[in-house]
Image (cartoon, rainbow, N blue to C red):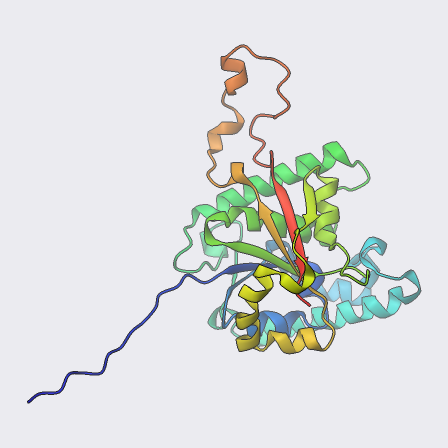
Length: 287
């Protein structure tokens, strides 16, 4: 009588995608967080972070050009906090030059497919959608807040994190960043950026001790060892970008007549090609 082979059951579940905001990426926990979490999620770095790394030698000598006052929690500790940011930047530079980041793997979207590293289940169209969404954010920012101009490293990296999360909308993305100083976990800088762009960002309406997403994410944080970083004081925050119009985009939409034009209607509050119309940011602490 022959014996049956052992039963081998494999459950194919799609991994979550997460984008690292620069506030977390350049924190003392940044590199360790990304490296460990890559075992459980598809970790994405924003394109502007590579620009920062390309200019690492300059920022190591001029840290004030990298971290503006708005990103520093307490002006009395500005120099100390900038020193920590520069130390982490040096770590990233070492990892970029001496470690094989694609083998971890950590992903990124560049200017083209050959400048990017994408997971197998993510199509190259995400690169074009990311670019269009980032450009649309720049337009919104210039219209709503003249004091904030694109071109600053922290500002551009925050824009890229928001745009990349929206471009990855079909792949269950979230942004990981750090919370503010408030005892209950202050709103992260990502929310301040969204507000400046005229996009609502609010705390998820869940009690801190009964957060369904916290229960869902906790196993991955535990298995990867990221929970250890939270226990040591990292104020981890998750941000979801809900952008319905960005879920499927047409490049011709920006120049095509709108439905209001076709119907002869005036006074429409939605600009043509505004993929951020009705977009919302939701955030919650994971500490």
